Image 1: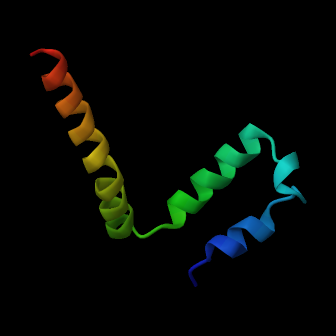
Image 2: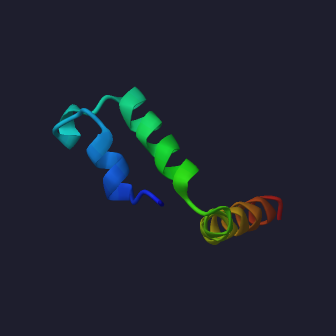
Length: 65
């Protein structure tokens, strides 16, 4: 059975988002990422990183001119 993000969140102890400590949030994020299908994770990562890397390269090329 595959857990949903909501299932993983419900398992956590914090009761309100404002009270979640950074370590708790990091652990929760790690658990959610671990549950994501590797193919989906790769596609999402590429979709997010591609524009960031392109922007960094363009900025670097522009600054060298």
